[in-house]
Each structure stands twice: as structure tokens, then as C-alpha cells.
Amino acid sequence: MKIAVTSASGKLGASIVKHLIKEIGKENVIGIARTPENAKHLGVEIRKGDYNNKSDFEIALQGVHTVLLVSGMDEPQKRIEQHRNVIEAAKKNGVAKIVYTSIIGAEENNAFSPIVQTNRQTEKDIRESGLDWVIGRNGIYIEPDLEYLDTYIKEGEIRNCAGNGKCTYTSRVELGYAYASMLIENKHNGNTYNLVGEAITQTELTNYINKVFDTKLVFNPVSEKDYLEERKAALGDFIGTVIGGIYQGIKEGANDVSSDFEKATGRKHATPLEMMENFKLNTN
Image (cartoon, rainbow, N blue to C red; front, side, top):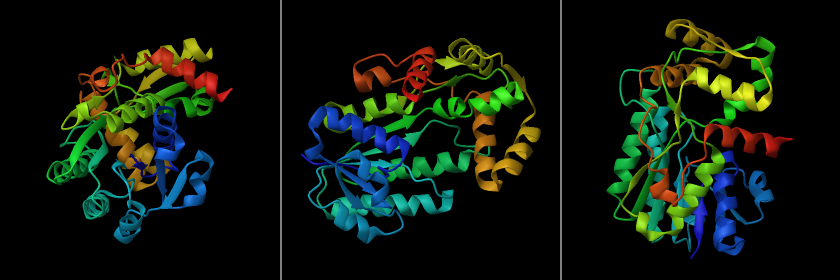
């Protein structure tokens, strides 16, 4: 039973590939990447697949039983058609099952909502595809905060507009484990899972970071307007708006949702402290 993972060169795709190898062996795993050379290090067969090119996937999905569709990173208006290219190629090749990495978030009223809306449309397209399916809605990754630690230390603070809102952080390691189970086990078919951990505030996040990394950071809440302007200046209009919208959503409660992680995996989600300790262990 061949399982293919799209965007295998990315951090989430690579994590899923590694977890699948442990479960079913590298001979049964296929990685798909826009630039195949960037995924060769995974040690599995790598096929070319650009979301903008359906013909790529008509070739890449030959002989595949199950495909993991990692949500694209392009602008919202492009992503629906990009995902449909994979879905249509899967149907044409007789793929039996598709698993999709969607996302938690507010569907309206913040700057991140257009991306959430495109994910919901892809969820609908997958449910109506005629294939077996499982959908995971990912929480916010904890790794970017930890990868940004040097900047936080330099500035002495974690600064955003989330206020006292709670965020159910997850990690790429936890998600890799969950998606491997969802891809392999048919009991998950037809389910949509919130793949999230424990809900914590930004103040709690800061305190956990201080404990694990021996830092002395403080959380500095700022207004949504000021934070959006800062992020757009630093990251450009598109990514800056996305980041601003994520923290606006946290403030408004969009990321404080119940977790289905144990249903998807058979075990509890790692705690924030455990995720941080694991990150520290694997980056030193």
C-alpha cells in the first residue's frame, strides 16, 4: 500500500514522511515535492509535484493508494484550484483515500479568515470527491516561537496582539505522528479532527519558554492595529497580514478549541513544556 505525501520538502511534510517510515517502511512511502532535490534526504522515492500543474500529479500519484495533501502556502485565491489539481489527479489515478492538513481558525472577521475560508472549501471538495477521506485541522505550531528565540532575547519580550486569548499550540512532531495514524488506519475515515494541544495564554507561553530556555522574557501585549503594521513592515503585506490575523484570532478565542488528538492517535498530546524540551533536545 503506497502512501504519498505532498510538500515532502517542507517541515510538516518531512515530519509525516519520517513517521510513516517508522510505521510501514520506506519502500511504501513516496514523497512529492515541487523541487525533488530538496526532499532527497528523506531516503524515500521522490516524485515531482507542483500544485500549479495538475499533470505533475497525474504522474506523481500513479500506483498510490493514499495521498496526504499538505495545504498550500500561496495566496488564498490560488489555493483552492491548486488543491483541486491534486484531488482531480487522485481521482483520475484511482487513489482510494485522501488526507488533508487543514487549519484551526475563525472563518470570518479577521485578517487570517480568507486563508481559513479556502481551507474550508478544500475540505468540502475532499468530502465530495468520492474518495475515502480524513481531515485534520492543525493548531498553531509552537516551533516558530522557539526558532525566533534569539530575537525575543535580543528584544527582551514576546510582543503581539493576542492579549489574554488562549492558543492550543501543537508541533510538527506531534502532527507527524497524528497524520501517520490517520493515513494508515481506516477507522479514521470520514472524520474531521482538531489536532491541537493544551490551551495557553501568551503569558503562559512566555513563562514556559523562560523555564525551559533559562530566559527572562516578558509578554508585551500591543494593539491589533500596531501589531499588524509592525508585521507588514517586517514581512510584507501578505505574510504580515496573515501573522497579524493569527494573533487577532487568538485574542478573539478562535484558537481555543477542543482537541481530537487522542481520537486520532490513541495517546494524549504532548504538553507545551514537553514540546519545548523536545525541540531543545533536537536542536542542540
